[in-house]
Amino acid sequence: MARLLSFVVLLTVFALFIWNIEAALPYSNGGTGMEQKRGRGSGRLHPSECGGRCSYRCSATSHKKPCMFFCQKCCAKCLCVPPGTSGNKQACPCYNNWKTQQGGPKCP
Image 1: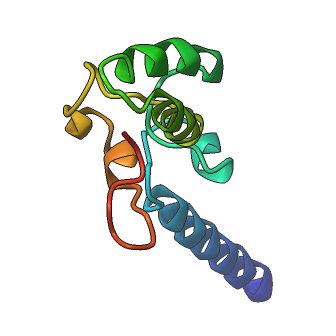
Image 2: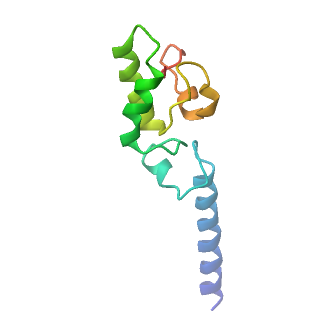
Image 3: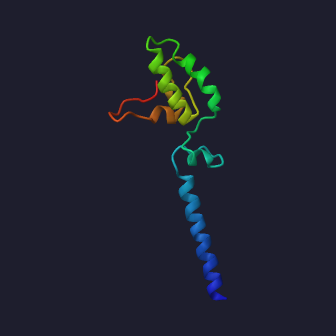
């Protein structure tokens, strides 16, 4: 009986430990946790909304093709596009924090 009780206690401690690790993963949005497992960010956009949001985001640049490419790539990962045509990246932490290998911003 003591072995069974100690096994249950050990299993409970292990489950709580795993639960705390998953809660501390980056881009946690307090949701179901599926966003972390799929590599998604903290945004609330549906992937089908990225095209329209990126079109507006890139409307003021003269480099539309690369802007659209990277904006859609960032939106697919982060599920968020900052408001406006530039700046405002603090509204989307994942979008803001994704950097190139050189340390520059990846997302327009």
